[in-house]
Image (cartoon, rainbow over all chains, first blue to last red; front, side):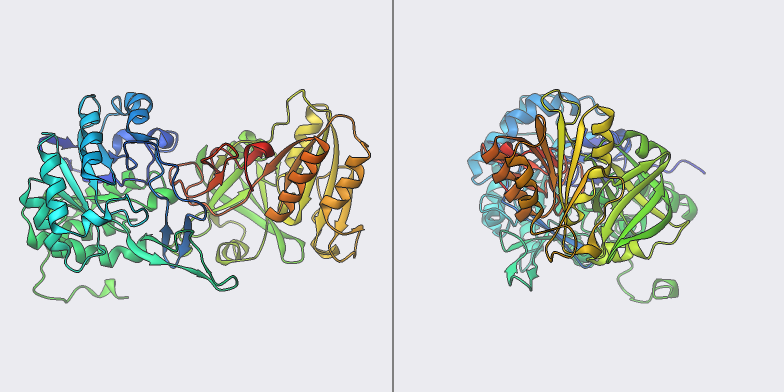
Length: 316
Length: 253
């Protein structure tokens, strides 16, 4: 097997491969160290950090659905200061890129968390959660508005030279408009997408399963939605797009890369297989090797959208 | 904590709609302590997507057993597993029962329904620590009693078809209120309503009490934050990582 180049650079930071782990699905990294060689993951994106610790939503927070998972965690996290004191020492030793995900209720809070993190070593970039569907202070009101997304991006851009990634919600009419607003204000990349608002009902009690009634749907059930959102966004912007949504296998990830995502994030599948990102990255390399592709980047955006005809195996 | 593809040895009926399933894992059998659990991916596909948590019911050499009743898609799929097929097992997970502490001499096991699941290992650990063991075992009816690997079992059934006619907590109350056991500590597992009754009993009689909780969870080791347990002091613990065993005074059921 020849060596397939899998690294890529984003905003000056080198990611060792194109498969990252999504925010909220890998803790702060240290929890998974028994089960996976974290240094073989393309990048770690932390659980969303808010300025102050958050307890999260009351039970019940999760439900299983057909090929998917509903969650309403409510951004439970230890807060930026404890993160710096307790988690950054580990993360700064980890031999892969670390991206801090930030969630907040006000523009000022986003700025304050980012400024706190800027003062310390160990964080290579930022992903801004303007798309959490489960708490009022989760940024969704920003992420569904072009002017608010633009404002937040502009303010944060002024505070850091590290990669600034805006994580978008699919729960809008035109995700491409929000994407353009973030791009225009200097975002380095866009993560597409956060969870899709969903709901489940217990027919015996006639109550919603989740304590917050609705939650965020993730897992294989949302992959086709995520692919369509990535397709929409990559045609609207020039900055890199990171594809997220139901990626469980190398083939899933390849679909996103071909559609135009420069990298992908594995989310819900980490709960089932904490080493999934490594397996998927290896599978991508193997596919490239078999196809005579020497750099995974050669695949990005190679979708032939002119025809819908594909090979028979994909149907049978 | 390890993740291992384990070969299924087979299942055995253990009661009405209740089965034990055995599989091979020398490492999990060796590492597991009473009260810990496994998070099992039953099939390879996307449905059911998430792992399912089960207490470790019994270990014997390299063999690990779980016990379950068929109540949903996960357990139905588990029931169809044939000898030689594999399941993806993550474990052992969570905090075990506090058995090796000097603060008690009699382990009083109180189990409702399949809350019996962690009790065989608890029994073995208590005996290994030189403690006395008494087991109060409650079931819906005589057909749903799973009493293997237990000691000094006192039975109750909801319908009176076997043992005491009533709840297992009422049965345990009779003995505990009479101070029948030397320096007791309660280890309880079962439905939430039963655990609430155990909590009241323990508080009333001032007996130390640990409960093992069951609930929906995804990852099983703290990364998804999906299984909050309300803490008496405010905020939440995670059932999977901070539990499933809790001192009853720490939590609000």
